[in-house]
Image (tube, rainbow, N blue to C red; front, side, top):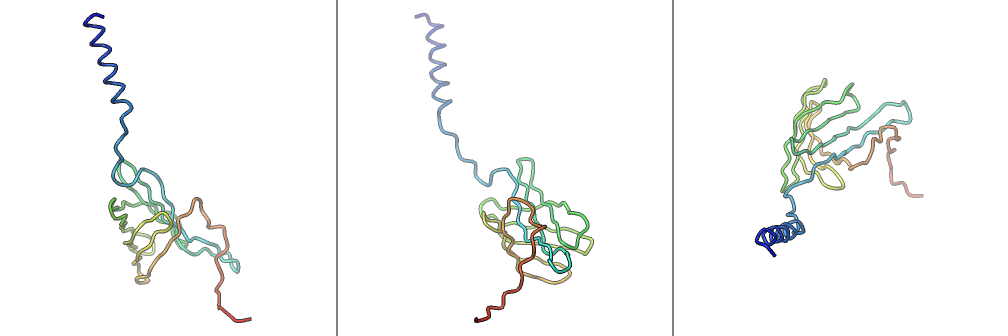
Length: 146
């Protein structure tokens, strides 16, 4: 075997070892879209209630789309996400005024506090796979005894 062949063979073996080495896990969330919502339609009058928050993660930057039942159009804004704690914070100017949120995004729900002109309120939005605005809003349960 010539020196050239040994050099090429050694390079191929080294490349093969490097090619099969496991990749390091990326710290933080992977890129993707997470939708959290409680939008629904009132069966009595057809009015919509609730909100939808769409979190978009990308290596180029994070973004958020905020939709509320009383808003004519969705509002796009930037969002702050802490990869370690999954804390999410955003502020958005809507036609009804400033809305801000601080909470935690999880695989099941977005939980936190929403501040608006109406005051502060705790929010728990379920993670959904698609829009559910067409579904009827749940009725009040009284817990009556039969």
